[in-house]
Image (tube, rainbow, N blue to C red):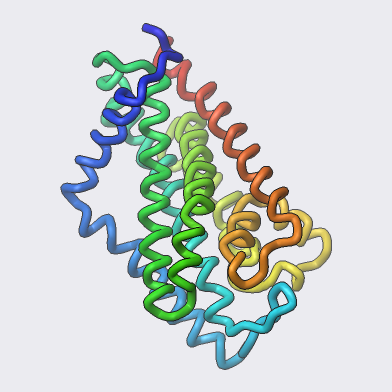
Length: 259
């Protein structure tokens, strides 16, 4: 078996297998991406807007709801792609033995890996798109800006999906997935300019938050408010991290299947 041989049909076959399973429970699976942003926007938007009022971002004054709406899209991308890559892949790898079964077909490891990775990214895109549509209907995010933001969302989905796959390949028990969740995902969720500008953080903590990938994604998703001065560095940083996490994920998962 050539573990590095890749065909578009092989990758699509793995992706389509996961999509067919998803279609059976699509309504339940669509509820979190729709309900979570509405809850966050109502709770934080209407709850804190009377206290905060407007926010200064990139030299512009915008309402607090307009400020957090792009962050809600980024959070949807983060949660769905990471958790699908972490929990979903771990279950398929260790409990359902889906990867092992797919490898008995005329599929290579690379095709199974890419198909699983693209499916995690697809879940992120579904969540981000649904959250974006809620923001558009709410009048908090321009529809055309959302369309042009799709490539940014896809890059973020690939990045966090790769982080999830690395987690799935690194842990030995499903409960251990909570370690990167609480050490990495939760800090990103709270500190990366999602609910307040990072400029309000102490200098040392701000530097740490600036290096976290969700900061770059959130800044890029706010391009319609103010394009980051060094937006290309943020994009390059996300691309670099995506390659690093994907490579590490391959090195962690491959030995488990080919031993």
